Length: 279
Ligand code: ATR
Image (cartoon, rainbow, N blue to C red; front, side):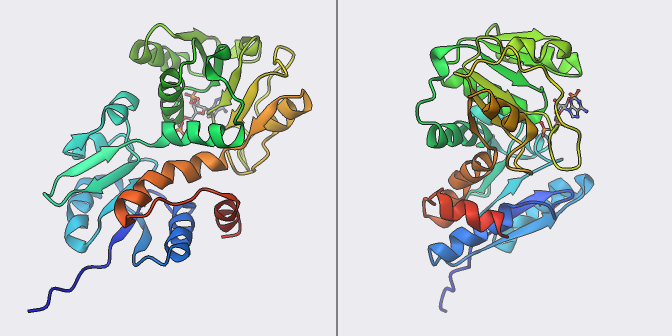
């Protein structure tokens, strides 16, 4: 009997999932490198998640991305969890191993750093404190990454203060919690300033901050990428800051999964950005 090799399948699990740019991104890379494979959006309700995930390897899936609202729940389902996924408390990339085990990783933090390194090569994370606005799931990945690259102090302000306090308990004394009312003032002397809230996204209100304390030396970045130029980035650029938009984080967090599933390290370049923007 001839053994027919299966075409590798991957995809993204979310609820909803129609807004996800990941199918356009992975589809572009598959075409660009002439690889066999498919990347499929899958809308799975939370109650069906565990059963659906266990089924996927049997259907030919080699792994999947995981997005809102499943990222935290995936840690209860996976068999092997990387240290960084455990620290962040969420997974965004699963690998279905040949031995049947589900391996869960989180590449959001490295995507965040890779985006800054690529688009602001002079950025020196250790040059001063970082200010992080927000304390949700994305903030956890950003804080873990900032600590890893040597930021000496991370000031966090969140509308709901207990979530920021939880980050301090989980990530330790480098984290300093500030009141949400101090979100503008805490940017003083910071080398890095990050918006991890959803404010500024199309359809939501903008961040209302005083930018008087923001130094022109700061690198300012936003995880929101619709629009690419948020009001937050526009205000920072007007004060002379280097700014980096959030699309690159999405592109870079996707690269490790693509490489593991399809065997090709994908390039994150202008053509990749344009492919996702025009999809
Ligand atoms: P994600 O996983 O994308 O970070 P999340 O966990 O829902 O999503 O976090 C969203 C972040 O945006 C939080 O920091 C949230 O603040 P709260 O913890 O107080 O909810 C912040 N955010 C959303 N809407 C906001 C608003 N209108 N004003 C201030 N912060 C807001």
